[in-house]
Length: 321
Image (cartoon, rainbow, N blue to C red; front, top):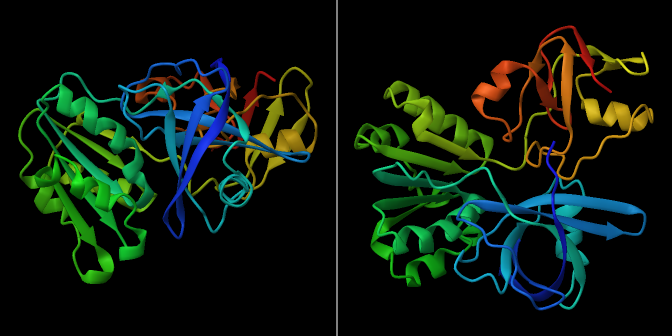
């Protein structure tokens, strides 16, 4: 289980990037430097709205070489659980928020000969922290950035104005320009690592195209904070310490069932399979892992699971709770 250092920060600035995207700049309340981080890192932002508490993970998009501030971008989601809506409608410059120290599940691979970056929509944000790092290391890289509408082109102008314009390709669905993943990956050079951040459909399409081209799994890296499908077949949940049993229906998570029944105390910062704080030991049964926190080997070991998002493949699941 992960332990996070939590830090109080002041909201220094809020910028409207598009009608749906705002950029937030944070600085420590004590004006000291923030913890160092590498490209691809994320933080967890905690928000309090009366008795309601939100906790969301966001990619750091500022340069790793400037820790005087952190910057994140928040897209206002239609099906928001409340966090993005709170950030957009309630947070103001000068407000204090609590954030975690950075964690990185999407780091730049040091052994890659070339880096191919594929972004969809707000998935551009982690790559904005990659670029200064790749440039300083004189890395061989290219970025392909897809979005549906011209008004959703968060940070396109900044990317065009940067020194790396000739390494970036843009694709706008409504204008008829689409990224041909099969063609792109067919030309991948040996030793290239592929990094994808965007909606589930984009991640799945990259996985499928890479599979057809025989690209090894260890060359593929994905980030997707919003898990779009947490549903699945119902199963029986058993909490071994209390002996209590529950049916987890297809539209509820294990964590929701435990919290709704006040069956056990479980900490969970992100609720999206990112932070690892709700890691729970599996005593019996097989988990259907849907997190981004564990490696493939850790998932296959079936020793523990993140109960905020993962489900059961077996009809019965016994947890050490």
